Length: 234
Image 1 (spheres, helix red, strand yellow):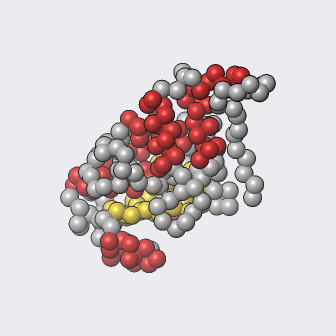
Image 2 (cartoon, rainbow, N blue to C red):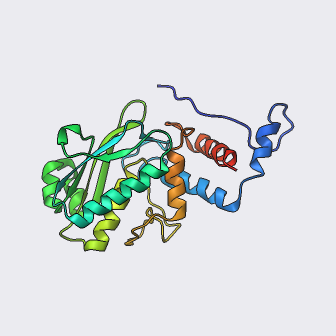
Image 3 (spheres, rainbow, N blue to C red):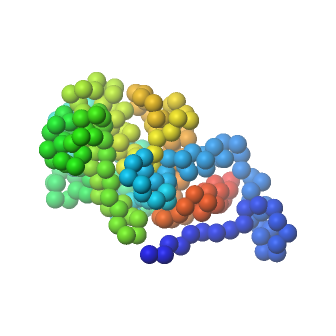
């Protein structure tokens, strides 16, 4: 399937018709450039599986059903995370927590790895080696339409549980890669117990779920779109 991408001139050139877009480039700050670079690092493709490095995101609302041991503390934290993400998305996407499994398109399991492995046998081996894990599925148009994750509440302590819940759910939005760049980022590759989004995390989430951000963009097209979005906001 062919995919359309936004294309426009963002460099100084003498070619007629590009002058307006050339002027836009001047307005990027150093922080804006870091946001664009970080978006490209965490939002294109996945750590494993060899999927193409393009933008993917949900278009239909995510409806979460929670199974396993639903502690009051973790359920409260989940609601906080959902509220934060919903406040950042402006393209019509939203997340809700449902009580009927028939309504769900995303499943969160809170419990031990072996129990999660029974529900998702293809992930059993990965679950044993990881205290948190997520999987998402997309259609031929690269739209994410369902997913599942778990947090191992047997091996993790309360602070670690909250971190894993936030990390795996956030990556399930289509921000699926880790990075070594920012210690306080939820996408930090090394083990942390960060329980808040860094400012740059919020911007990356916001930009993926911005009305102008299309699905199926490669790095070049995504960076052009990000530049346009950021400069239009100034």
